Length: 318
Ligand SMILES: NC(=O)c1ccc[n+]([C@@H]2O[C@H](COP(=O)([O-])OP(=O)(O)OC[C@H]3O[C@@H](n4cnc5c(N)ncnc54)[C@H](OP(=O)(O)O)[C@@H]3O)[C@@H](O)[C@H]2O)c1
Image (cartoon, rainbow, N blue to C red; front, side, top):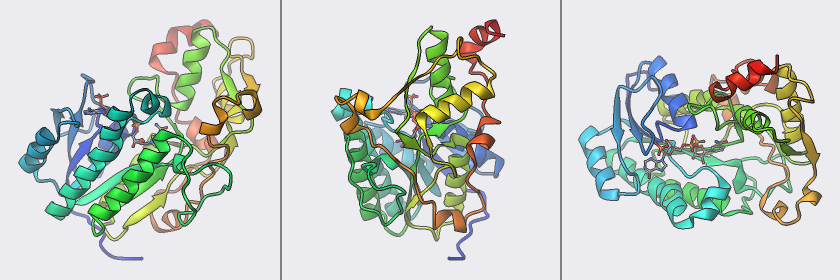
């Protein structure tokens, strides 16, 4: 696939600018010289890279429409969502509004404006029984979050076939704006609270950093010839237990100060049916087309910092 490489400075309307991926996207797009208008929700803060910040409730279609008409963007990047399966279960109406209705409205608007539309889905559209998953594999979500994200993929493609691209992303690593959101930050939160995180030895994930995903999303804003659904992740499928062990070793924490309890899916029969076992992804054709390359978990670890909320605890262990 070739052509359609957009090298001009784009005006990008970014939702979820205060979130984990959105903040990373704003920085990456700014570095590439784009003008990013970021929507934040209830958070007072957003990271660097935003040319403009708008506080908006994205479940209010009228307010969203008027903001879009006011800015008339070249591209819309949707990083807003209810991105936690448990939060979807806790408030299905809110998560339907954010995870399905919002991307549908944004895609319709992108189609109307002939603007590029970049959306994020999840590996959780798969059931975890037939990894590695290609873009041709049959989705079969086992939880509400996965079902809503699958509905969003289909609605987005239907509404903006000539403009939309969706990336299915894996479990995300890296440094989040809150210091509490990512894979290693959650482990630190447990350890600092004196807990022993329970980690599955038979659940396989293929994480990448939010920064790596953000670089891909920026490339996809520029590569307007890439349409439909693609996969992105790191290049190493690992068990959650192995991921946690590697985080602990990387930060040189002892087993005493940073304990881990390895469990198996059989230990949690009540929740395991809603947790896909193996979500390894095949990254072709995207990895063969774009400049960003998937990273090993070792390369990801090198980018992790001690999460600011847990610095005192960390230094007390040394
Ligand atoms: N994190 C992961 O491991 C992961 C893995 C795979 C795929 N994904 C996907 O990646 C995308 C980004 O996820 P993330 O982890 O960056 O999510 P996140 O950190 O939870 O951020 C969610 C964003 O949505 C915004 N938002 C929520 N409700 C809103 C509302 N009513 N009005 C305005 N803004 C609202 C939040 O704004 P405020 O906080 O300001 O309210 C925040 O900026 C999602 O599509 C998610 O499904 C994430």
